[in-house]
Structure formats: C-alpha cells, structure tokens
Image (tube, rainbow, N blue to C red):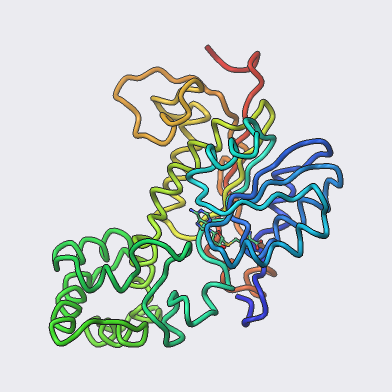
Length: 324
Ligand SMILES: C[S@@+](CC[C@H](N)C(=O)[O-])C[C@H]1O[C@@H](n2cnc3c(N)ncnc32)[C@H](O)[C@@H]1O
C-alpha cells in the first residue's frame, strides 16, 4: 500500500527478471496502473517498445508524463486487457515478445474514496475500474437475494454469504444502499467476527469488485489473447492477488505447457476453456514457474499489499520445439 502517495509496484524485480526485456523487442503491460512496471521495463531495455493498457481513464491520463519521458517508446491504450487483440490491432501490432499482467486494483484506486473500492473510507458505492457499466450500487440494490448470496460466496469465498445477503436485502427495502460506509455497516452487523481479525466487510467488498469489473472473465480472455500474441521465446508473466484468479492463471499455464488436456497452439482461446475429455495436448509453451514465486520477506514487510501476490509465467516455444 502506498499511504496515498502512489502505487508501489509488487514483485518488480521478479517481474523484470522473468520478463527479461531485450532491446528491439515489443512488450505489453496490460495493467499500466501507476506505471511502475512500465518505467522499469523501458529503463531495463533502452531500445524496446512498450504498449500499455489500462481501463481506468485516470491511469491513462497520469501516464502521459511517463510517455513524454520515453518519446516514441511508450504507447498508452485505454481499454480492457481482455480486448488486447483489437486494441493492439488498432495500432498495427500483431505479435509481442512479452506480456505482463498485474491483476486487481492500484493503490491510486483504493485510496481514492470517490472510487468506492475501500471500506476504509466513506464514498459512493462505485468500484468500476473503467468508470463505465453497472456499479456496485446497481448490483447490491437490484439482484435477487439468492443471486447476491451466490455472488458473495463464489467471488468472496464468504462463508456467511446467506446471512449477509439477507441483511442487505432487508436494508435496501428501507431505501437504496449508496455508500461504502452503509454497506460495510450492514455486513459487519450481519457476520460474526473473523477469528483472523480480517475486517468482516473484506470478502463482500472483494466479491462485489470482482463482479462489477468481471475480473475473472477478463483474466480468462486476457490470458488467451496474450498467449495468441506471443512470438517464439515471448513470455507471459502474471501477478495475481487472490486464489480465484491465481487458480485460473495456474490452470491456464499448466495446460499451455501440456500439463493438461485440450490446449492447442492453433486456438489460443482453447487454453482458457476447460479441457475436453480425452483431447490431445500440444505443448506450445514452457512453464517458467513450476511453483508460483512469492514476494520476499523484506517486500512483504514493507508493502502489506504484496503479501498475497503470486507470480506465474510461461514462454512460447520455438516451432521446432513444439511436440506434435
Ligand atoms: C495492480 S494495478 C497495476 C500496477 C502497475 N503494475 C504498476 O506498477 O504501477 C492494476 C491496474 O490494472 C487496471 N486493470 C485491472 N483490470 C483491468 C482490465 N481488465 N483491463 C484493463 N485494465 C485493468 C486497473 O485499472 C489498475 O490501474
């Protein structure tokens, strides 16, 4: 966490070491955020080109200063990384030497009460990274109780989902729930204290944020698209912060590396789909991280947000190395 002064990039040295940027190569940072990874990549290989996507217009606006520092080398694109194929096609790019995704929200977003991501501040119940579409307020005030309970259970791994959903529905009968403080109060009153000391609102806020931004769907689309864009030797490096997204990354990478059925280098989208029973495996990628990398003790102490980070990576094999 940044204490409101910006975003501390998580596992930056591990990301750089794994991506290994080279001069003359082209990379994509699919989650530009505060530009911490972007700047480090541009500095590590002074003649590489970097395309950077963020769905948040504020992140793109902030990035203009960095783009001016690296003339002609940093190209900012506003949009969702799940749409990276069309965003890159728009600027004439069909292949890349590396893609990095640092999932979730930035400290800029978390620490801005107006964005409504955090129960630590009072603000409108928004949570939209891209500032478009349905907000958290739209969801909590409209969906049926059973759907709300499933959402809290599936996306927040909240054991008290049914109780919390019931309390939210009772509260919204009195009038719409519009602020983070209101929602956090309802959840805290409905759920028993967590033995770990975790704020009782944590899991419900996580669930709503994931739903509002379709974060799991984006990860699936982004992984499939990135895999399809990588040139031989190109690397995909992903940093995930909660078990739901990390599980998707882990399975995708294992299948891409032939450790599961159904992966096809001819159809990258197949890599994000569950394997068909008995399907043949063609390993188009090499797994660079048989086990996820975790932040070192010093980083975990200095930046609590890094503690849940897991880094996983794959590399596209050269055609002659792909097993038939
Ligand atoms: C954890 S921050 C990235 C921080 C960045 N690595 C740095 O060093 O400053 C994640 C960023 O990705 C953006 N983001 C999250 N999901 C996205 C998506 N599906 N498409 C585009 N941007 C996304 C968020 O708006 C946020 O700015």
